[in-house]
Length: 463
Image (tube, rainbow, N blue to C red; front, side, top):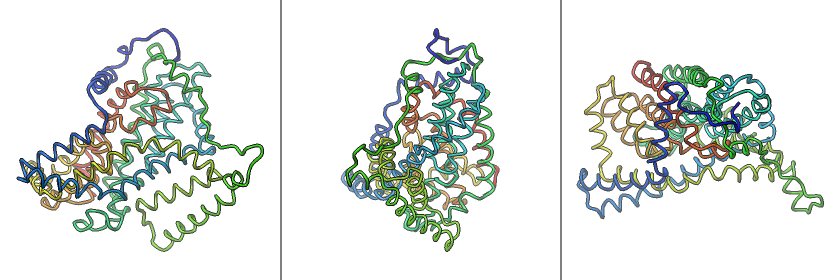
């Protein structure tokens, strides 16, 4: 099994895994923190505005500052998506279910398939939930397989837990889909409000979603090396596997009035009841009308119910806070980039450039490819839409292309290269005790295979 045994040469794996490992070594050696990319993109947009859009440096500074604070509400919504999803996954009842699920796998290959399947399935509900559930399941699978002395490749299992970050942009927690379904979004003047049902339930997205649920888990299982080739576990990984996280804040032996209020089920359930009543009312009167705020409300009140009192819920929230630090810093920068592109006229120039290399048939493909590249620099669905959304929408209008297909192509590109960008893996790595280099080779291999699903889908499937 993967344990503290003698070192095993990692290059004894298959060709795809070796290629992925090489790409990972390059990424870990040369790729800086994603926040640096946001800064570099800011400077690139600044220079492009001067050189291409013929703006003065002072005009570009003014454009930048004008946009800097335009996405504060959206940034808070994105923070809550991470925190509320994480809190649900940290609930005792959720953890109990994860432990039972981990007992299903009887081999390392089955474990790789199982964690990838669960991660993808959970991503259709909530991408933050997928990340935390996947990480906890990977850890529990490793624990179960170690106890049973079954060989397993821990890096591959953890990579499977990350695959959900490639598959969520077409479903319920899609930041792009939810944003364009929210009244007052920043592109409403151009495209109006598009219901999430139209974004999700169209032939292209349904077929791509089914393919993503079926194929990547199978591929993850195929990537598992033979028993004699599994990699040994490092000490930090073993410590994290054996560590039991605390998600319950116990009542003190001699509780004060404040302690009793903190742990009061009545207060927690009364608050949750108000939320549930409104959610039921909302769907009863408006049908399947889902936006970012409603998704956050559902997971907020579900988490409170699952934790049973406010003290336990706040503890879970604190555990998830670390995952939003990148958003807090980077979203104002993305907004500033959006301001420079929008107010300088760069959006029209860039849109014209994209249209010039596209035909009506290839436009969705070029949109997908450009989004895949931009995601390496702006690893956030919401942040990327702020930067690329105006360009994509303007280009689509010039090409008379379908707006929903264009938005989905941006979303697919945004999530596809997450498998080559470890920004969102920080929380997973913290839970599993691994390093990015341990998983990125496998995620890159899965990314290459899944690229065919996206490319064929955006080229040939209708919306």
